[in-house]
Length: 173
Image (cartoon, rainbow, N blue to C red; front, top):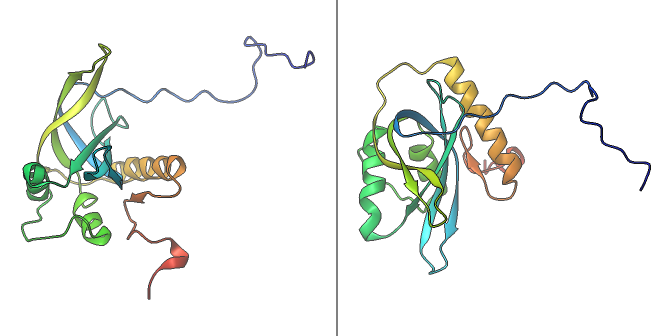
């Protein structure tokens, strides 16, 4: 392979993409772009959600959260439900119902930076409140881009915004 050379000083004609902003602590407007069901190593069912920030300097930054489906953690799904205006009972283990709640609209989220075992910090969502602003085309574009990214990274099990949980050729009607 002696003929293969990388020259970082050469212009390859490819436009460099700006780095995605990193999430920091504070109040952020987030929109769930996609989710998938998962099971912990202890057998607990959960819903892993990828959110994207849709306003401000951190627009396009991602943060992940998991809703564990236990009685002790049910308050988190209840609080999120209220933040998106869902005030009637629903079943988080039914994909279509979960999509109707989780992917419904932006929410205001309180983000903290939580220290990890290795000393690094990662964003964590402490709670949600209702988003009262207008939903713009830019916000919809940002969440659409995040959904496309999720689908690319999770082609087998991603449920995302604008999705009923079915591929276009699998719609059950």
